[in-house]
Length: 504
Image (cartoon, rainbow, N blue to C red; front, side):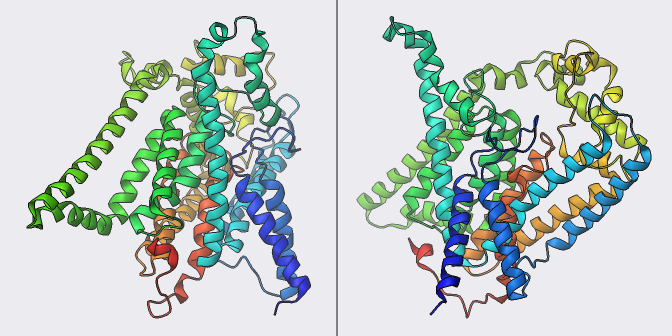
């Protein structure tokens, strides 16, 4: 029997763990004191930080390191290289930018990196076996449902908005902004423009990124591995809601990355599922009972038609939105003009400037968090005109510290070629470990591995459009998968039997 104090300690850990998983959708909580100008303010950091403190205390008391994992070695290599780059940045001694100094930005960058590591090490320690995984899925999905519900409220608001004055001619127009005011009360931004859904995330692109990196991997892997935490129909509904919510964000980069990552994951891990589907599809043709054969064939044709119409509707919905359709409606022939025309000019200009910084400091970079000191002079000439975002950076009244907004270019500019490849090696290790898990016999390990493959591929693709190391979306799924992978070596077909979750 467990000691009462020990039992209360474990209950507190599980409470903080469940709370943190549930609150993951809230990416930019207004009242989290992480400094002015910081957009990444995940509310789940509060329970996760307390939980990390308890795990460290437990490690000391038990004299057992709870964070032991082979994935730490490549991550540690990156940390050491980034520390050397920060030291080199001191030697470069860049002049102050507005009120920002190099020590200030360096400490801020390391603090945000530490926040990101919290979202890696806590899942690493709290998700070690199948029972803990099922507990994790329970609260992860509850947070997902909260995200979907609030996204649905936003969708209803956007559909209702054009008819407000007609339905309520005497009501004040201020009432129409109630939802936006509620959003701003909790988040650092209100409703997104152009009728794009942002949910509980800061903006629509963050919503798509979160869905693709944190929730979709587990929902999609359930079907490829045939491992269902609850009944199949609930997984089908949640998977459909996840894809629909991502589509309603109209995040061009996010949706393209999600689609590409799903296709690659299917090609890498979906062979067994493909064979089962093909066998299921051919079943009617082996039936001798003609009426029974006809009913089975009608069922399969109906499912195929429903999937085709869903895909057609998704494509139509994307092409009907001006922001998304701009990708193929642009008439520019020059690549730079095309990027500007599709509203991607600012990101291209910042990445261009970041690459120039890397060319000037290729080996050790300019120090973690210091690229902004060199960014404005490195902006290309073509970005000085007709791009409001870069024009704002160049204005004499500007006081915003610029960011590269591309993780890979940022790593090249701030940590040099060695830091970049160390970080790439870390994610290559995560992807390789996930592929190995996806080929293990216990079905729950296959499920974990496929989730890791899709999660890593999505995060790798999303790195082209964000640069924050504090964002939970790049750490949570890898941490969850690596925690399970550490104990997978002891799992054998003889010691593992099918669980109830597999047969639902």
